[in-house]
Length: 123
Length: 183
Image 1 (cartoon, rainbow over the protein chains, first blue to last red):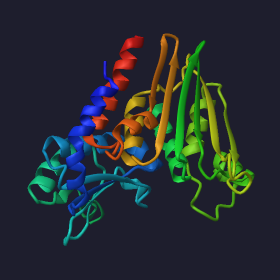
Image 2: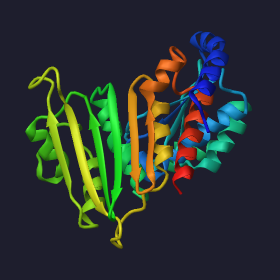
Image 3: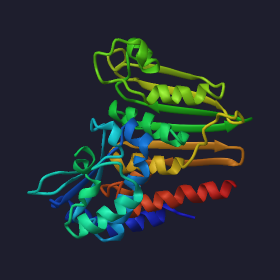
Image 4: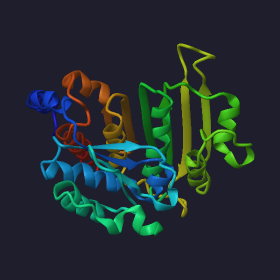
């Protein structure tokens, strides 16, 4: 069974990491988590990003956060990627599989997946 | 919503947005009735607002403060023969004890009962998005209780954020083990 002692060990291990995080100025992945997003399946998408970013060891460069309604409810789940010095990327109609691809190609490889962006849907 | 746990996530988000320092998510299953309570110590709502969140289509909507979250929860419980009630005290009315208390009951044996789904995932999502506010989760079932109080975890973690990946994993397994012990 999980114990608080184990949590204490995690805390001791994490202490140094927290200091690192404070100074980070990396990429932000923002998932829309209002009623519209949640109903459309945003929870597993967020989960995929949180897990994937960690598994790929990107957690010191990429933060995954939540936001409310972005205003394009018909395209939910919507995920925005903010990178320093670059234009914002808006991915629409996301699912966990697409999230995995975004992690691989965009967050790791630096290539925006045009087919999943809002431009591809509205064009 | 495909799962009740998604309604729970959605409505609990309102509590966080209302500035709650503690949001309680309480589930109680007894004799085929599921009672869900979401209790917060946020800014509260006036009587008018309480009325409009329950039935948004009857209001002249001047703000975007009110959405589909509560009506969807109301639908989910009423379609099983249950009911939804909201009690709220604004911070202006009572600066010490204010907040909102949403109660929804569900007849779990009704054909239109939406499965609870992955409630642990919803709790984890809330913590991931709001690591600086506290959550108390309690799920009473016939075999016992599943419980999580982030205030207790925070005492151990001190300044390590609750949404650190390793901490979230610990919470996930901690909840999972409690559920397994019940079944």
